[in-house]
Length: 244
Image (cartoon, rainbow, N blue to C red; front, side):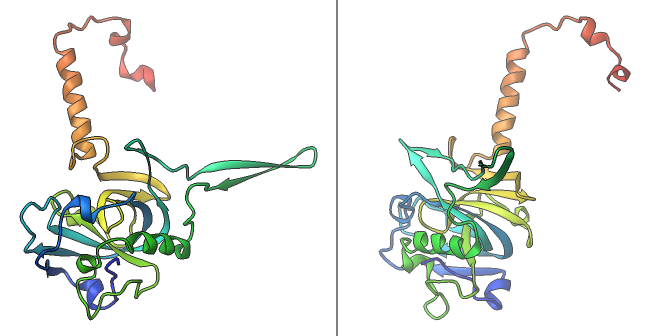
């Protein structure tokens, strides 16, 4: 039930608009049910997407950056007592062969979608629980499964992200807000490692960015240190050349 890019116009269109049907719910407690997923992949295309005629009382955004992601990995998000438990995706397994030979292999015990086909299955199953009347709005073109193999579309809130955050051909890790295409967090990946956290909801006020958290912590540290008088010591008198 995830809106899928179909190649051609869908991959290159810059903006689309969708009118929500009368009586449809656009609230998180009905649209974003479930644990959600973590997905990684390469950005193939993006566009802006706007929802109109959202009913009164809606608490979800209506302006999005729609990201077409060619997926490579995926796993379900896990929660315990309302707190997310991050998956252990890199664990080393040691196998002893003979008296002196040991072989090390890397296994991914909590991430079953370790290839595009397995990842696409996890995503399709999760997104099948999303309201099809919303996320498959074009009856003539939208499909329940990818028209382009392993390419799925996810919706990032335009109030929290900007188009320049996303570059075609770059690798990203996305977290969905429940079992629907709405993006809760996005991280740019370089060579398999986290490069830049673009935004992250969990653990703080919704919409609080990573940089905001760092700035608040820095301001608090400066405030706490403002009443202390620095006392010069031997360490302070050293010349920078001593560190060379």
